[in-house]
Image (cartoon, rainbow, N blue to C red; front, side, top):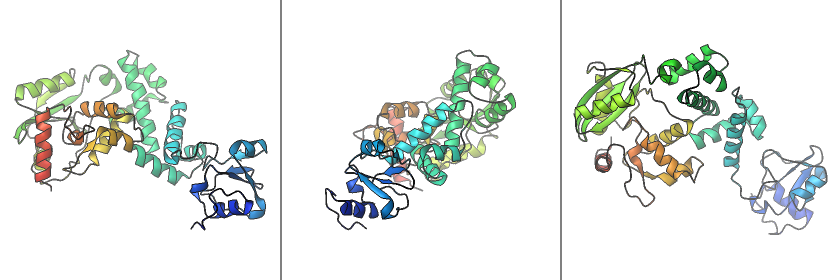
Length: 358
C-alpha cells in the first residue's frame, strides 16, 4: 500500500518509497535502475523489489540509457506513461506472429519476446482477441492460404507461401477448419456435400444447412425457394440436397433457442472466416441473451477501438444467424442498423430474447 510519497518525489528517499510501494502515480516522474541486473524500470514495475543499495535513480529513460542501463521488458519504462500494457502485449504478439511467417512461434518464445510469463501472455491475449496465440497464428496462416487460392495461385504454391511445411499438414488443418480439401475450396467447394432443411419459425422461414463436419448456414427469409437459392449461391460448386432427417437435431436446437427453451446455441460449425471475423463472432456469442452492444464497444473490447466499421462488416458476413448472434450488435446510439436478414427481423428477434429468456 502506498505511504503517500511526495507528489514530485524529488529526493532519493521519496523515490525509494514510491518504488517500494509500486506507486503507479509516479510513473513518468523518474525511473530506477538496478546495478546487479543492468535494467531500469518505472516505479510501478511488477518485478521483485531489488535491494536498496543496488538501486540508482534517474529523471527519465534517456538518462538511464546514457548511464549504460537497458529498459525493462516487463514495464517498458521507455514508452509514454499511460500506455496500455495489455494492448502492448497483444500488439507485440501479433507482430511476432506476423514476422514468423514460416513457423508458428511457441508460447514460450512469444513470452520471451514480450517479457511476460507464458501464463500471463496467454490470459491477456485470449481475453483481448477471443483466440489463443496459437489459434490466432493458425487463423492468420489459413487467411494467407485462402487468399492465395482466391488469387489463382496453385494449391502447392499457396501451401508453402502460407507457411505450411507439408501438404499433409495443410490437409490435416484444412479438413478441420474448411470442411473440404484445399483443391475443393479453390474450386468453390467442388466435392463437398451439404444437406439442408427448412421449417417455420417466429421470424419466418428458417433454413439450416450442414456438411458432415458442422453447420455451414442458418438463414431467415420469406420463401423456401429464395432461401435455397441463396444457399446455392454461397456454395456454387457443392452437392446440395434437402435432408430433413439429417438436420432434425440442429433444426430443433435453433427453434428451441428462438422459443427461449435453449439459452445458447452450441452447434458444431463448418464456416470460413478470417482471424478478425472469428474474434468478432466470439465477442458476439459472449453477449448475454436479450442484451446488445454497439459496434464501437465490441471493437474496443477487441483492443481495436477504431475498427467499428470492420466489426459491422464481420457481422454482415456471418453465415449462421442465431448461432453467431450478430443481431445483438447495434449502432453507436443504440439504433438497429444493418442485418443480413432484415432490420424488422432483427427488431423482432431482440424482442423475443427480452421476453423469452431461458
